[in-house]
Image (cartoon, rainbow, N blue to C red; front, side, top):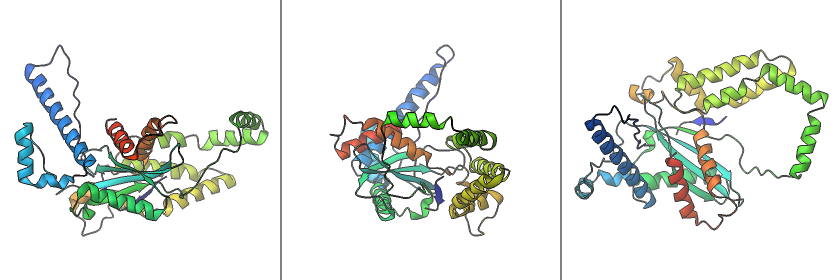
Length: 324
């Protein structure tokens, strides 16, 4: 389970409205067409700025914004962050070439609804450790926001807690592996262990699937974790003690998660801004979104596409993921 720590972004949302061809009014069709076109304009403009390394803060220049509105005929928003707070999701993976790839996603912490984060950076790292990942985050946030001091706007970071630099190697051929697994399934010890799993921890996959769902409130996510904790307490024997200790090691030492729990039960710092607190309503506790971005990346970079230029690959993945 990912660690939760304090530390991001903004979201340009799309609009989708289903209208029955038999029941819509003429004004509804015009309204939908106009709003859909405006939404596409916002997304395209944001993507163009990011790809051209133009900070969104440049939209705060009235002359530049008015120039865009004059020649596009569309209302152009400025990049004001007042009253907004953000979260980031970051993780790394190894691609089919053996290269270390880091992804950075940014989403807005909206007190009224859950927001989908946007992939803003995908880059190859020379190696993966705390130093290179921190540099990757800082460099890309500076690239995105330019001179804007956004540190106070970042309330949350979710990331994978797994150790870095773990390389898995396939030591056996697939056929041999399958044969060995089939043989193991008939061993008495394995049958007993599978029966144990079925009896006491069969609920875990459902909980994991639920936590991967978009739109869950912080309260709902914490309740899922509390449910797991209570269920593990009734698991008997040494296996139960091992599971309970593992849960405690993963979640008990997670200072960020403890703070989220404090917010949920009303243990709030006296000097904390109420609106800032409300932004945690839909705060994500998992890094599942960055795993989805890796799935898109790996589906694009297959064994026949190793000639991709890194910059083009980054742009292609960003466009594909952000339109999911």
